[in-house]
Image (tube, rainbow over the protein chains, first blue to last red):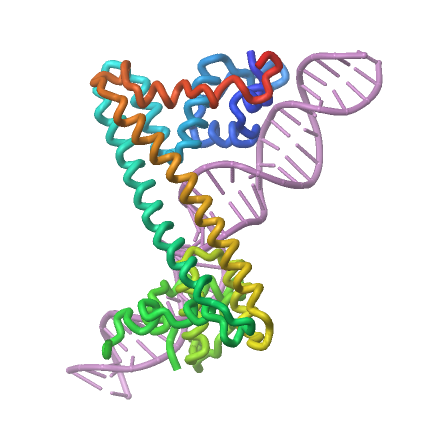
Length: 142
Length: 142
DNA sequence: CTTGAACCTACAGTAGCTGTAGCTCGTATA
DNA sequence: TATACGAGCTACAGCTACTGTAGGTTCAAG
């Protein structure tokens, strides 16, 4: 029987996080000691490890809930598991693409700025007057 | 004089977001009409555009606050502006690197799974038993 | 038996908004 | 001038995924 602290150490989770997972019903309500402290077994350890590893891979708690549900019915098709993972992959790819565009823009801004006074700073200028930013949202004349 | 709704449309911001920025003092408290509705001028339009564009580039509200402060003192050195932007760039790069590692892992998982029953699903297996995940956080015997 | 680390509940806070309820204001049209 | 209705107002709850705190209780080693 494991205490919550031991479970936390074994899985690299904070104690509060485990209680939080219980609260949102991602972890089951565990047994308790005489004095009312939580006691866990191996099944809970495995479940929490699954959750934490999925989190490390960036799955949302809702996605993890779905994956856990799926893994509880071993005879079902794993197409759904595949779909959840594919969706997550597409998500990650989209985020990468977006961040990459940001990276390029930031690098451009930095490389273009060789002023030493704030008044002439290219970075601030770009932040102030990006053509896409002002003036073309729904304005009658634009 | 612009109403909050006009300001919102011009900058592609939601009305609530503008009120939120006012609440956290990122936007100034504006003048009001007779009846108590917010009225804005060009300066506020520019400021909000600056904020929104910076947000599009992924700067945090705290970073934006700093950039706005800096841009209010045009005679100062813009080294600080550069530093804020550099820091943000390094942040973005780190996030990209992390996401890229995730992407590769997810792709590997998906490509390895050719089962059709959940019981044999490689994806779930990987999520369950990642060697780095269990068993090596601070355990005495490990 | 004592001590102190670990546990308990309950709640507030984080970023950056977004949405809702229940009201009031402004303005275009008849 | 009356009225309708979109836009604005405040205040507050909710979102994700935790994290931290206060104030009290339990457990286990010595």
